[in-house]
Length: 269
Image (cartoon, rainbow, N blue to C red; front, top):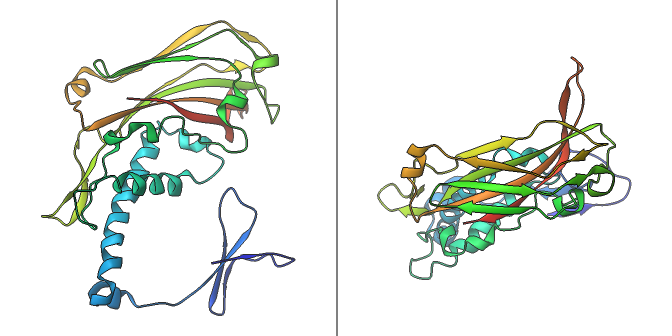
């Protein structure tokens, strides 16, 4: 892989090279085509090690995808592609399994839940720089619920409104990520807790003016009793807090503005 610098600005294919961009970067990436054929990689003994790592990476990709959706859809506010970062985090978690052989290692987030705590979905303007107040989060595994207490918010000093939009709202989400184990029978990775893996509940606050004072208040999000009964030690809970900005829509009502906001995983348990 190479980074294209200078006056060349192009995407697509040219000869034996492909040019493309990635979200969150203004650089053009160049990659050459070619390499071993798919058939050779699948069957040749020389690629046995590669096949094992590919199998593990498929489990990491499943982890990254589900972890993203367990954030209650707040990945829509991310200003960079968070999926590869989560995939890489899954690989680090998989390496903690020192008992299984490579290619069959399990991915247990429960062994190190702190890996996702404090995960920022924004690099340019992280949540702590956009919402400048000290909120408090209480997470309960027993009731599968979370409550976030927000202090009084003076938008003139406590809210960084980069795009100078007229509305904002607060969002709290609660999601579940299950451990993944390697199923030798199916030669694939699957969640230990199928029923709750990747589900989430979201509490979306009302639109507020970006030129106001919001009194202190609490926002609670909880799962249904049937979902509470399914909780096991193989599940990890994620609590996210977000600020989303909006503009006047076609009907005169506030509507969200794409990528305008910040989100963060504030608690895990």
